[in-house]
Structures are given as structure tokens and as C-alpha cells.
Image (cartoon, rainbow, N blue to C red; front, side, top):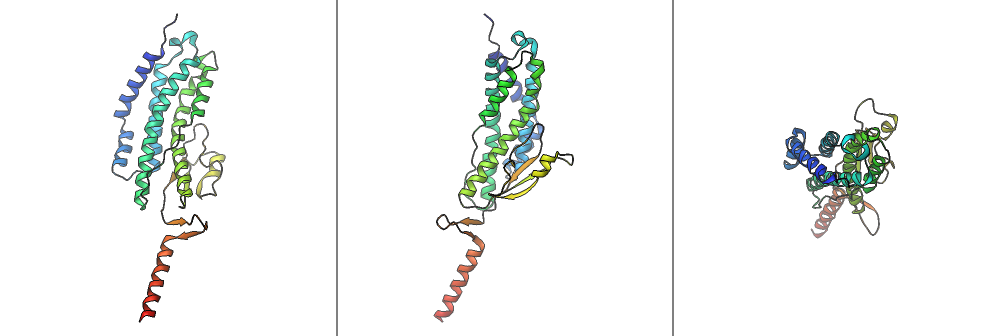
Amino acid sequence: MEKDIVPDLLATIEEQFDQQVLSNEKIKKALQKLANKNATYLDANEFAIEIGNILSNVLDVNITADILPDGKMYFNISDRILNTTLNKNYDLISSYCVDLQTELNHGVGLKIKGQSAEINQDRIVGLVNKLSDSDDFNAVKWLLKEPIVNFNQSVVDDAIKENVDFHAKSGLTSKVTRTLDNSKACKWCRNLAGTYEYPNFPSDVYRRHERCQCTVEYIPNGKKRQNIWSKEWTDQDKKEKIEARKQMNLSERMW
């Protein structure tokens, strides 16, 4: 009976991952900005990319064909390794996004805690199945590289979507901005770039293809509210001015 390689392999991966995360300067900078209450979703994206790069590098170093049974990434190995490591990445990134969104909310006078999105388990299942679908691990090892980073970035995208939807349902205006990663971005990404107001978002505004480094950002404004009964939009500043005029007219009549 062959020895189960997963427990020792996971222990090594997690130890190296933790060490590299703690010493990574970009991660330290992103966490410091969050602590100083001046972080944005661009920082969250940078945080996610660095976490993803570290995990990808650690997996690349420690998982090789020669340590796998018959040089194949079997389902039971792939399933346990990716579910453990990607769930941990999700926890780190999701926690960052919740704290970030909470501060963004407070910054515009909204005493609302940031919302967390559920982990996209389908993405993990897809990676697990693709890795275990080949008899030659070297032919699919690339799945432990960029797709890992892409998964991490999608955690940020999902967090933005969750908070945009939550704010919109709470009667607040919501706008998101999708920015190209560089001037050589593909046609698909160029068509999605721009700022959009809820609910008039392109259906793909949160999606990203392989190796896509575009960023999606959301900053609440907290000014407009919707009457949940009449469904009519009212501007809070305008509403306050109207109330002030009413008070002035009342005072004049009293005199």
C-alpha cells in the first residue's frame, strides 16, 4: 500500500506559504494601507495577486511528477491540496475585502459592515478536475500557475459584486470602474473598460479571462437613497435643501 503523500506535502506547502507571505513587501504595504484606512480595491487586487503568486510558486516547487504516484495528479491528491490551499487564500483575501469595504462605507457616512461573497467552489472543482484528467502531470502543471492567481483576483471581483448588489438593494447608488491593465489589453477587455452605474452593468464586467490583470473598483458615495415603497430616487442633499426651504417659508408665515 502506497504512502499517502498529501499530509506531509500540505504541511510543507503551508509552512513555506506562511513564511513567504509574512516576508512579502507588497503584502506588508497593502496591509499597512488597510490599517491606515487608506486602502482601495486596487490594493486588494495587488494583495490578491501577491498571495496567488506565492501559492503558485510554492506549489510549483513542491509538486513535481517524480513525487506523484505514476507521475499523475490523482483526483484525491488534487482535491485535498487545492481545496485546502485555495480556501485559505479565499479567507485571507475575503477578510481584506470585508475590512476594506467597511472603511469605504464609513468614509461616506454609511455605518454598514462590508459584505463577504461566498467562495466560488465551482472554480476549484474545475481546477481539480483538469489537473486529475491527465495521465501526465507535466502536461497540466501550468494549471498551478496563472489560474491560481486568476482565482485569487476573482475573490476580489466577487466581493465587489456582493457589496454593489447589497448597496443597490439597500437603496444606494452603485458605480463600478473597470480599468485595463495595460495599453495592449485584448479587444474583449477594451470593450468592458469604463465606469458603469447599477443596474446598467455589462454582464461580463466582473469576469476575467486567463492572464487577465484588469482591475475592478468600487467606491460607494452614500448620497442617494431609494424610497423602498415608491421606488423613487431622491438625492439626500436636494432633500435637505427642500426641507430647509420649507422651514424658511414657515418662519415667514409666522411673522
